[in-house]
Length: 111
Image (cartoon, rainbow, N blue to C red; front, side, top):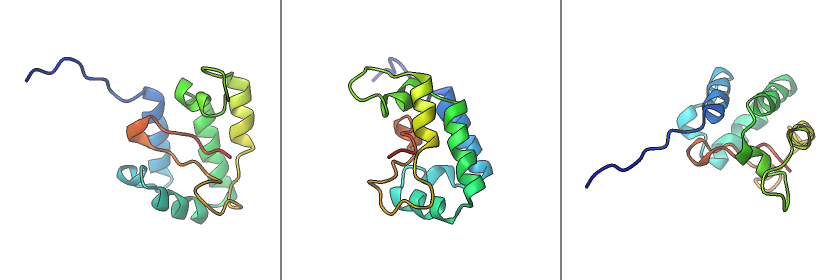
């Protein structure tokens, strides 16, 4: 068997993973919804805002698509608005908070 192609993770996703790591997240557990909810609920409002700003700063088309509805990609302005308006500590379930997933390109903190 020969390796045909290898696609590295998006640079934006890696930057967000680095930022989350600096806030105390275990990068290897970013795919775990339960871990992410527990960790996000333990953060202060300032740290949650820092996570949101990291997603805005390192936006990627896959992240924007999660807020675009029927549009194939979405606008950066609408994406930033939605991420800033995403629930913080008030969220109670996985349905209220879509969690980052490094292996699949990272979804976004959203509604």
